Amino acid sequence: MQPYIKMAEEKIEYIAQQIFDSKLLVDQEDRRVCLIAYLDYVDGNVTYVHQFTSDMSKVRAWLAGYSATGGGDAPEAVATVLYDAVEKMNWRPTGARICVLITDAPPHGVDPFNSYRDG
Image (cartoon, rainbow, N blue to C red; front, side):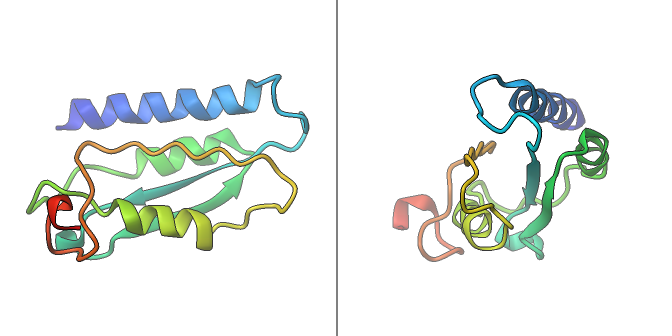
């Protein structure tokens, strides 16, 4: 599993760097990215919210601090992480918003302990 985690870290870092380097976004001087890492409901604490930063070294440190653990079922806590992205992040009212969701399994349904097929 660790090679997959490493590849995901590299891709996430690449995506964050592309956002920083993008010429499409108007505000060239004040770009920020955040990270919400998530586990599944069966693994305990579901999300780990890292607020926006313009410091790529922080992003790299966040990514380096995670490893694969647990896993009692296939579906993931996608609804929870998307909720946190909307409700727990300090988005600027006038900023462009880009959300990239990376997962390795389908989401749970409405009931977090049932599969996506039930919700």
